Image (cartoon, rainbow, N blue to C red; front, side):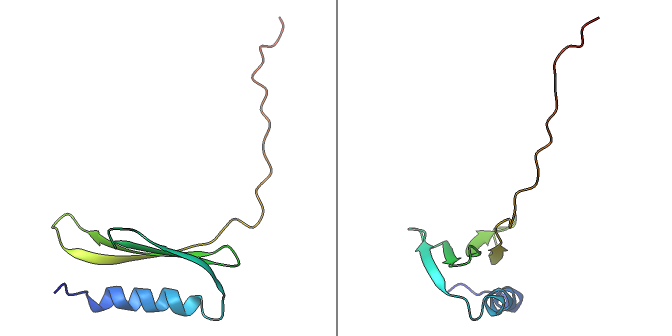
Length: 84
């Protein structure tokens, strides 16, 4: 049986508590059971993955992805050659 460090579990709990009260729109588990993606109806996504460090020890990685609210303005740059 694999043991998961308490710090990893605390990160999962902190990420999940930040999403409390939100509605789940979709979730996907990888076929090898190493990653779970939970998509919220507001566009946020929680990703919990089982990863290995350089020493071969397993740990849980937790990420909350927030969509960009408004794309920034684009800067137009002219690359034309100036006439002499």
